[in-house]
Image (cartoon, rainbow, N blue to C red; front, side, top):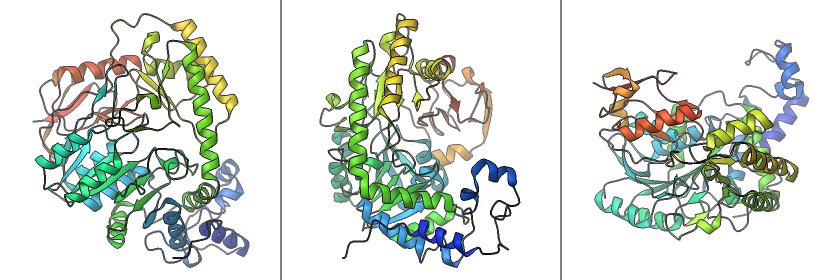
Length: 482
């Protein structure tokens, strides 16, 4: 097949042609190229609001693309080495949910690590599939969950040969990768699909000497957060598919939940960003990697912090590591990650991605420069000097293995009662509790509430973690099964 011209950005080009036509709008959106909402136009700019338009013949339709959107998808598929690519405007949450809903229906089993993003479990609530959790190993020094070991996956397959799919994080929030190629082989040998949550792995497709991407590993579907390391606008994402999944069925699944009014701002940002990475991705991510390596060396030289990387690789639960991730362990200076996160923002005007009980993540990508990294390094050195204390009595674990009692769907929709959170020990939870980010549930519907979990939630709240999930916004009460 002839290669496509990756210099093209068909949605962007169609919008530019449309802008020059000066069409009179008797359609939605009602702001009519910004004229009806001058304050919004002043805030966002005329250039932006003039292309916030509705689907029409010259601009194609996201629900059933046949022209410029279809061409943009074909260009993306080639750039990512996929058989098919779908433009997603509901974030990688919608990509993940479409992927799971394509693979699973009510009563089907899916093998997955428990340290998944909440969007995966949300999909199980929607479709009624049953999770078979592989509890990841934990690095006890860092308190972080790792990848799935090959033998754990094999054991899950042997115990649940009727499972329809295996889902893998590639990588985890912290940068840890499982042996994806081997897991794909295991899945396919047993007639199962392999799905990859690549919310944090866009650069794997374009960088050099990085962990294997899902499509290169032979996975059947992957959700790729283009707006994270790929540079597109927030909420824009790709769903990629291999040759063994019916693309028409995937489109039907996407159309169950995705908007019929796709944003051309988001779609054009995907189009332009794909072009940028296809043409310059290797150079871009070599630069990001160099910044990350420099930052790690400087932070580790401060003392007390540990910016971890590929020295962690053990060939199994840490089969590979994403060297672009700047994950930093903070407990040795006697501060929880979330405390360092708050200090950086409040005292130094530095906004990092997240802090949990023991670690922080500074997200590096295509827009970072060395001078910002130097500012982060000097702030961390000053925080250590000003705030370091004894770490005795601090919690270390980011991950507590859950006890699954009932399916997420059954538990979410069951009759429930609201109890003060500290009186729920031994009950079955019917909602989520998590720190966001990273959005990995501490508790999910159908899981038993234990004393360790309650202590963790209490501690995380005291340290200032941003807790989300339950109906009660103050997280003083939890819904449990009657």
